[in-house]
Length: 109
Image (cartoon, rainbow, N blue to C red; front, side, top):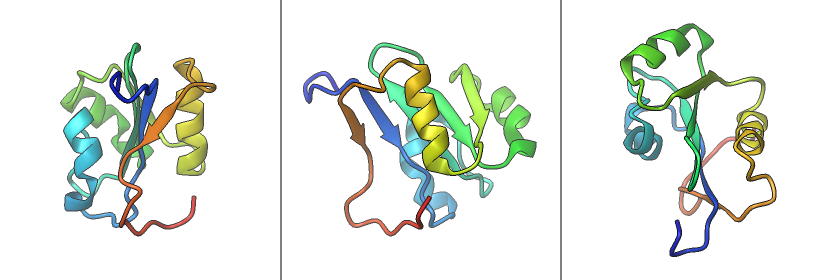
């Protein structure tokens, strides 16, 4: 991130919704698998924020993969939740990289 001048990475939820399509967020947070949709904001100088699709699994993921201290349930659209996470870590005006946009099919939102 530093070499590219990035302040933060966004790892969006992959709408393929299969465990094998969630590899980026799983690699960086440990969260995914068991058909859990996940995304993350990963700042260079702050703790990452992980997002999970299903609120009923939030407490389970907090216990199972607790190295990401801030794990939240998605609120509304994925994009809204990711924007809020980036704002919460103070990088709303920063240079943000988005992982996995090339050659990946996604649904809006």
